Length: 364
Image (cartoon, rainbow, N blue to C red; front, side, top):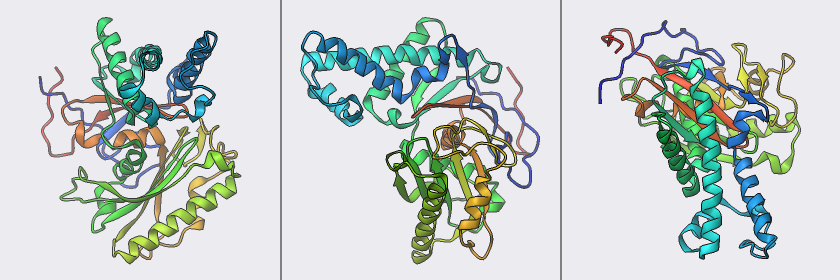
């Protein structure tokens, strides 16, 4: 394999910016792309909801013949873990049903990947990691593999692979890549939050940093809240996030874990440099979009100081942050992307940066 070319971009800003394009390790070439076709958003063709819609459709066809393997169980209550288990031990009809659903979903995923690769911001993408809840399941891995085969058969050379960290943790681990090393120096960990359309996680991420290397960063502890079940107001959601953060801050202090005065937050949508969610936040509890809501200011006001400092809080798109967890594993490529299959389809494309002082390799 030829050595990948490395591009050097403008120097990282001394103070991190919300929704920034130039980060310490990568540039964010594109994210939160909302592709449309005659049927609506292209990304909606490869979401967790679509997988279940396909399963529901095939169950209905089987019921017409009196042969639904799941009986009266609603599709929303058929877990990914159950589907994985049935692939191994189910009868022929059940296994056939699951494989049929995987195949149809893989076709949709291949269509979505194909459309993204046509975008200027995704040109030259060498690898796509797939995150989100479905990526942690065997049915998700099968869908990725089948989609990759479909694309290869069309002459599209792209590597698809599941995200390496569990999706519940990847959206927290990636937050360490939002901060330059000088913000983290002398500290053991940071606070991070991963706010999704269905679930919300707040965690402490240990840096395990040596000479600026964050490849060993790992979640020390995290708290999970499935907010969609509770249908909170925006203020209730903010209060719950702050409470979760305070609980983890207290536990970190008890364990003498020195938190950096930095909080990294991922949430759906297009984020501008002021930290305003411009669009794409429709699945969050309450109205989070627009100039009249400042998520960073609201959370900062609810949190105590960290190490006697008001924390620097950086907000970015959740797919970007989840993708950033893969930075240590992307040194063999230059241009790579992430798709997150969750409530919707998150997306981001990155180009690796080279630090000042390192030799620049010529473009092929």
